[in-house]
Image (tube, rainbow, N blue to C red; front, top):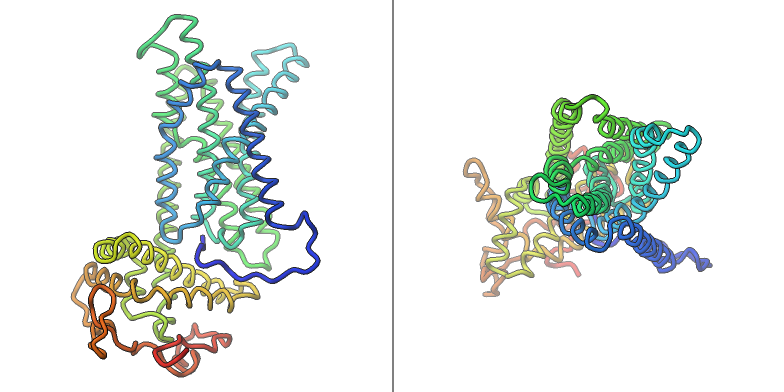
Amino acid sequence: MATCPPYPTRAHRHTHWWQRSWVRYGALITLLALSGLVILALVREQTGTQGFLVGLGLAVLPVPLLIAAFRWLDRVDPGPWRNLLFCFAWGACAAALIAIVANSFATRWIATATADPAGADTLGATVIAPVVEESAKAAAVLLVFLFRRRDFTGIVDGVVVAGVTATGFAFTENILYLGTAFGTDQLTGDSGIASVTAATFFVRVVMSPFAHPLFTVLTGIGFGIAALSTGRHHLRRALLPLAGLLLAMGIHALWNGSAAFGEYGFFAVYAAFMVPAFGLLTWLVIWTRQRELGTVRAELPAYVLAGWLTPVEPYALGSMRARRIARQYARRHAGKEGARAVARYEACATSVAFLRQRGRRGRAGADFTARERALLETLWHLRGVARPALDYAARATAPVPVPWPVPPWVHPYGGTQGTYGLRTAPSPYAPQAPYAAQAPHNPYVPPYHPYAPPGPHRP
């Protein structure tokens, strides 16, 4: 999910008022705020004020852990926080409101039509709820996919967007269930481990906090694979998200209907299906993240030949451990600002690698050169802080001593002190010839790369 720096956009003439960004952002924020107020009123009406506060306090416990887990998965190329905030707000407010209203209406209609309230509740939980809830959550993934396409480039992005949306939805749903359980305990006088609140907390928060994220992640994977498809495969790009959504609905229905399988049906479905599925999806996402690191190591050497990066950087940027050590090194020697600069450098370099891969596959778009140039210029401006840290991290994590070239910042040059107190020198990696002329043997050099980095003698 590329975040750095902002990509240049074309100036649109004669823009209508409804096409302006502030109008769209304002409408979206208003929609989410109104949804939040309505869902707050509905949940409080069903649980009571005390039940709402108890449910809120218990439901919030797994949220930081789940958000941190999805953010960890997205560490290779982290996306903007505004996307995650939108997804969480959509799940907690808009999707939850749609689900409560639609599920209640459908269940009441079925109960009235069949005169069987118990059957209507079972049908609503196993058929209506999965379809409505997964569709409502998938709407957030679709919106990010359509309107934040540059931040949605693969499977990991789909998993993160879908998972955060489902985390917000589960948060609101847990408030409702836990608050209702607390109200029941107040009527019956139960308390402690034997209470309904404790049992609900154990099942929903302790045993299955990943249930809703697991369902919706399947939809996100479908969108992620569609994002990797080329423009020629229009049918595949349309069917893959739909297939993921249908699979999410099916697994959700199985989970909701587990109580109908007998006394131990819930535990049987949990042990035989949910836990293995969760493990499989976790492995898939981590494997995909390792492939992203491999893409960074494979694509960045072309920029080393062009002079934008040093020889050690592809290795350091392709290792999460080396990245962490580089940020720690920068924090020790240059403070928090230095660590943030190194983190931004890592994000921009990763975005360059992914952009280059999409360019080779014909999926980068017409503004490839402008976007690539903007990212490279950002790297060039941050190199003074980032290069010493990445060089240190590469040497600290190398499996064997590697005779890399001595970086330019350790050479004496006119007595000028460089970053971290080291002396600076003109970069030997900045060639004066065009990019293509520097590496004619490189199969990845495209014909649209006519520039080299500024270098010490360039403006």
